[in-house]
Image 1: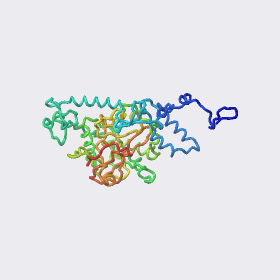
Image 2: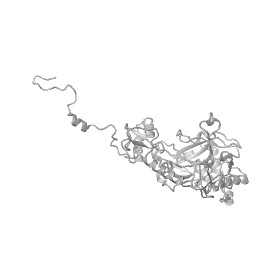
Image 3: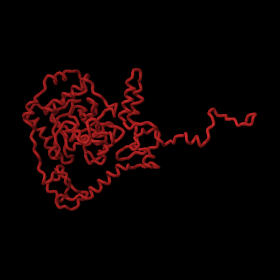
Image 4: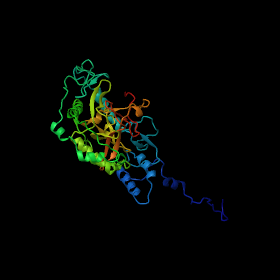
Length: 414
């Protein structure tokens, strides 16, 4: 349309922009937002500060956002509506532009995991039998103590209890003086037990008063760990990461303990230091391996143990063969997600069996233990509790995929 002077009239509300200038001003859809989130800790902490301001009630809206916020592992930028791809091994997310990927694949592997996988393949291709020094096959047996591999015909020991003939079963005796010291921490235990159940979530364990049976239970744990060259410990060990890496701000909605339950947990740790545990015993089962059995009735919500062991990043253990990996701190990146592995240190938690998630009613009928993660004193911790009343002689089971992670295959479990 032209006016009376012959000039073209723009009928649009916004001014006319030359196409070349418009192209320069437009941001490509796949380009990351200019938000520097190299530290997810700082991002989450800033959101928490906003939530704590008076009159602000955005928790219900932002909780899901923080849980599912994703950061590209290459550019360290927050992912927001850009095309992404996820590694199916470490489960980290990437901008497709950052990894030069044009289309999504169902089983895509990032370069970091490809490198680790190639190292493992080359390592296991060159494993020889510790007895005859010939290459082992898929049916090889590895000694649970020295970790050496044998042909089945070369394994000169009972296959049902896989410790080779070169390794002797250790017999570490518990400290009698320490056992005698820990008869009971009477006043505080009675004080906490006298409180109403509605006021407390945790219940302190009731140890077996017969010192002989109690020593037998502790001996079973020490023997099982010694047979796998693992040192007994009830604490988290930070050899592969620092204690500062276990930062609950990375998982800001990790549940915190109230005062009563926090005091109960601290008293439980005191009891553990004196070898005062729930009445549990480790046994060897030909089908399942090591199992844990209750030697007396255990009340619901009783603290059974803290999941102890060596803390490491998920990124470093994506190809781990361990059957006892526990999530300690859950974030959106394998670099900051922490796990607990009983590599060098462990306690009875290592031997509690897992339910078969594929089996009907296994959770309601079989599971009698529950694992819960808490922010305790500015540190993520995992506590195993009695899910219901556990009867004497009952085997302990819990869900290895507790919390909805669904990453551990339990189809072959009993």
